[in-house]
Amino acid sequence: MRVRQLRREDLNVLLELYDHLTRDRVPPPSRTHLEAVWDELCTDPRYLYFGAEIDGRIVASCTVTIIPNLTRSAKPYGVIENVVTHSDFRRRGCGAAVMNEAIDRCWAADCYKVMLLSGAGREEAHAFYENLGFDKNAKQGFVIRPE
Figure 1: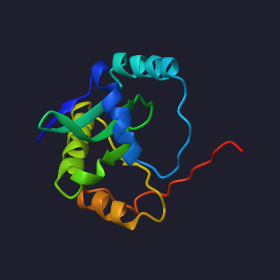
Figure 2: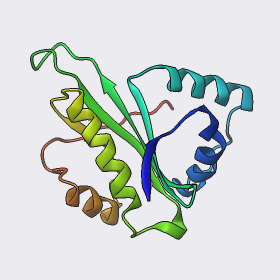
Figure 3: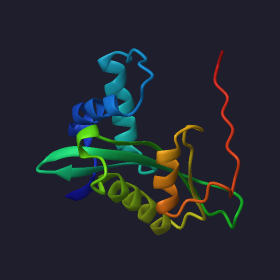
């Protein structure tokens, strides 16, 4: 297995992998819109997408955004999202590999913290994150969505 930063040509593979991410099936936007968003993400160095590759196939991914900040000596912080491993490749270290790459990039960018959110009832995912060093008791997360 190798971990690498995803590129423009990885969009289709990433979108297929996202089928393993959520049970909520929301219709995707148009292909044109997806490509425009992906181009934006690929050209801004603050957005990083990592993939674990086995035999040339991306089987796990996560994204981290490095956010500039005015507090904490103006050190940035990282936010990890969309952590996913193909269901056929779980429990093989692929998810941990992409997460560790994302975390390492945050430390290299002098982030003072890295954070993520996880669904409240996803105990298995919570154990996974705790094994990587995340502290579920350090902060309280809140989410609001449009009605």
